[in-house]
Image (tube, rainbow, N blue to C red; front, top):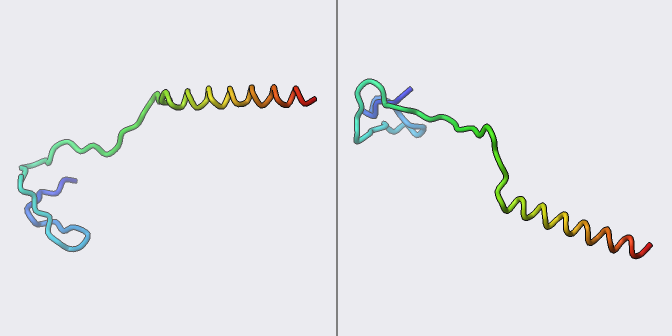
Length: 67
């Protein structure tokens, strides 16, 4: 529901909602949410994964040398 902004609706503190640009009929387009269908990680995430993989390889080599 769009508030007309003419003071007939109140906000959470009981103050009238007044809009400087009054609209007639509908207030226009209301976007409530945006969703991502196919999200890809950022390049920094790939760099972090590559760093963790390299660290794992180094640690595995050190463990094998001790044995």
